[in-house]
Image (tube, rainbow, N blue to C red; front, side, top):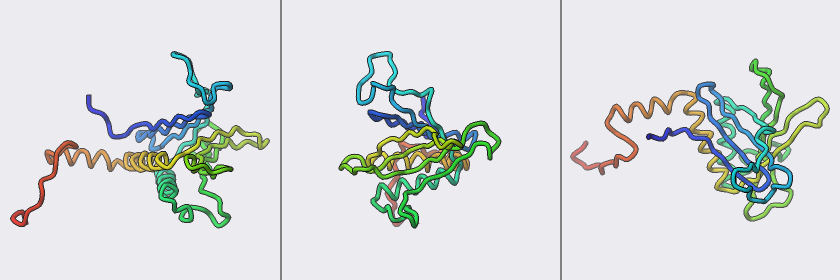
Length: 194
C-alpha cells in the first residue's frame, strides 16, 4: 500500500494534544487542540481509555495564505528569528478566523503562537486557540512546543498549501510520467551529459 504524501500531524503532551489535518478538497487546513481529561494530565491512560477530550476540541481552519503564514512563523521561531514575525508591540503572530464569513457554522476563533510565562530549555513556545465569545469567557486551549515541533508544523503547513493549490499532485504526476519515483537515485552529472 502506497502512503500518500499529505499526512495528519499529531502532537501529544501531558495537558493537551494538537492535530493538523490538511483537506485539499475543501482547500483548508484544520488545526485542532484538545485538553487532557481532568485528572489525566501528565498520566498515561489505561489500555482502551481516552486521555484527551476530543469531543470538546477547539478547531480553527486556515486557507492557503493562512497555512503559509503559519508555516513562515513556525520556521522563523524554530530558527530563533522571532524578530521576523513579532509585531510592533512585541506580540507573536496570531490569526482571527470567523467561519461565518465563509458561510460555515461555528464561532470565531483566534489561533496564535505565544511565549511561555517561564521559558525552559525544552518548551520554547505555545500554540493556542481561543474561542471568541461575546461574554469574553470563551474556551482556550494551548500546547507547548519544542523546536522540532515548530519544524514539523512548518512542513505540514507548506505541504498542505501546495496540496490546496494542486501543485503537489502535478509534481508527483510529472515524476511518475518521467519514470522517476521517490526511491530513484539521481546519477551524477558528467561533462558528456552537456
